[in-house]
Image (cartoon, rainbow, N blue to C red; front, side, top):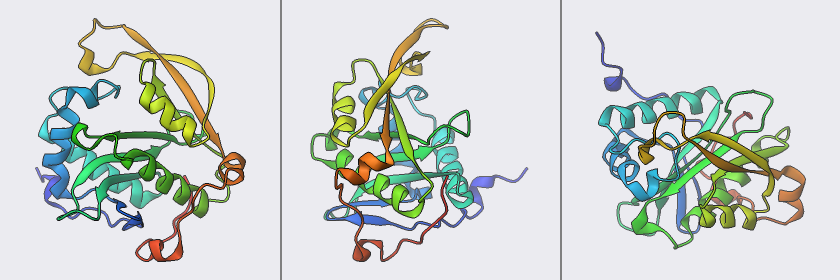
Length: 220
């Protein structure tokens, strides 16, 4: 049986998006160890529904491979968040936007910043870059959503600061890392950002010099 991991990753239509120190780039095979470490951190996994603790290496490999496939097919955006001002541009977290469930629903954000890098503005800068790119390259994109587990006040504050508004509540299975009995559910607050609100608020958009190594791609 051929181990697909040893095949080249699909080329990404977006090679990098940057503003000031924060740079978003596609995942690479060299990110596996960092994904395992960050995904296995309980303070990260606590707010992510599907993160087991610890993360197995095969899952990190699969995430890298699947993210590049979805990017190449135009079915989502998946980026490592890096600091371009530091040596070797370390990966400090990740952000993505994908379609979940009904294709008529807006794409949904997911994101994390590793504990050692939190409260330094990385998440806000990364999401502004991602949202700017999504709205700029896809004129038909009218909204983006995000779901936040009750109690995650920093994430809720982050979204509100980016002009997301609460759309309602829903329930989902408790995060894997909580080790709760099967069937345990948690309440989620669902947020939505409308395209008109994004532009009306005058959010910063990606300048041409920051697009220098970014190719425009179709929408989700």
